[in-house]
Image (cartoon, rainbow, N blue to C red; front, side, top):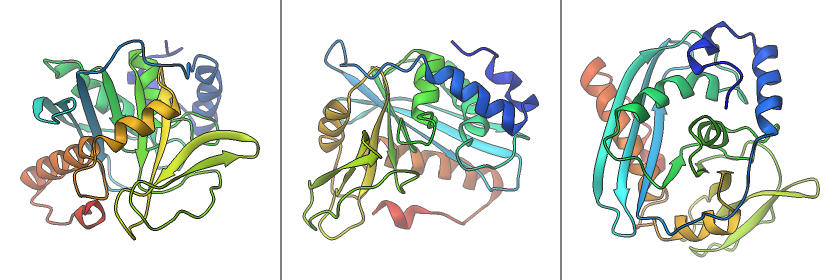
Length: 237
């Protein structure tokens, strides 16, 4: 699918990365899942903005019980700069290494970030879905682009995210009076399906289980390997 391999991302300039996004964008398929899902995976990345070390993790869960089936973690290096809108070029190579180590490939990937709710419709979930040809969706903690109407404070309320006239995702409140998360399809899944599935992955925390557990996994790896006690877990609860 990619015009160059992810291993070559290191050699791209930001302008070239944007050009590649524009070319990959033509291949996005927002379409219904072809079969019911039995496994769902969460993926997350941890890194400091100005450091080269990247911690990547994928955890596969049964669906709907959401019990662990498999997991994989990777520690790698990247020199691609930290640029909002181009973060997938830092993250994709490490995630693909973790993907390659998984003993069980999931029916659906949920990535901590955007799908098509991205200025060029190429968030990390879309990018990953395209290069692996896997159904993928994004579940982000913050909004990157677009606007939505204010939500009621009750859990389960949702509001569509628009970029001008185009619907690109939805804000979803997962707990009463708690900031929403931002759901967008990435590849080979619809927004309606993405919302319905994420609602089945909420277990009392702000962040749905697939990405919450992936976040905890990569933070554990980071702590064990660096003795880094800093964490962003507060935003998960």
